[in-house]
Length: 275
Image 1 (cartoon, rainbow, N blue to C red):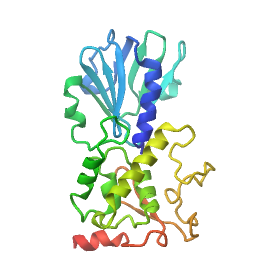
Image 2: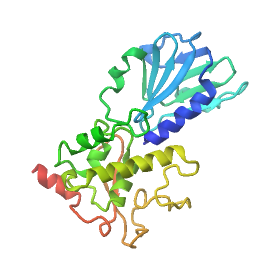
Image 3: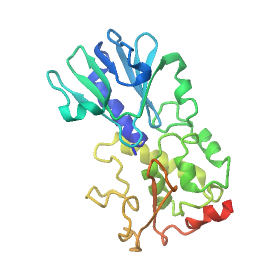
Image 4: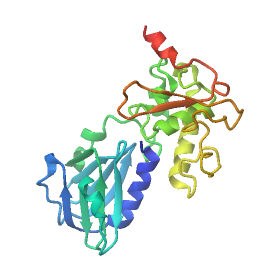
């Protein structure tokens, strides 16, 4: 699933091609907005909040999209178009007066809202480390509000902090030396937040650092635990373990951890507490 840094980079790519230009083509291929015509509107800006993308247009309009698991954006230059085989999966087409066209593919969320009412679609989100209005104290307060919540679950809760996804949840748990099921009340939350902010910002803004947590860009060695099931831990050599985070989770999230480097409760602890 794309994380906050993924969507931030998508926004930067779209703004290079669309911002400041006037729409000459628009097609929202979703039932609720199928008749909307955005031609003539000027693309003002692209903003993100967590994993949500906001394309702001003149006339107090915002196109709100979310990638979830399978969505993506592709931009083609003048005279070019998306391969025909991909066209059935296109949900948004935005063409501008420069000749560039942006295609939103397999987007599960496509909303058209008033810019002045963006809070209706993103108001529930917590502070975002990639935004200018980032509030570290508020992020710590929200994370500490329920001390019994397992650490990885708290990191993933976009209402607490927006932008960290499953990759960052797994890697931050490893880097801080905690089992993913450690109650967050047992964690140094300010230190966790500082590390998470540094990692997400570096990933989004430093060329070549995108989602590399080990400092090694070699394939299969970019992460300490995420995606490394049954392989040796890069720090101690213990076999990395993996479990499904939530049974029948539609996002297909998994949890990876090294039981040696990350001491603490295992995956059965959550079920035991619930019982």
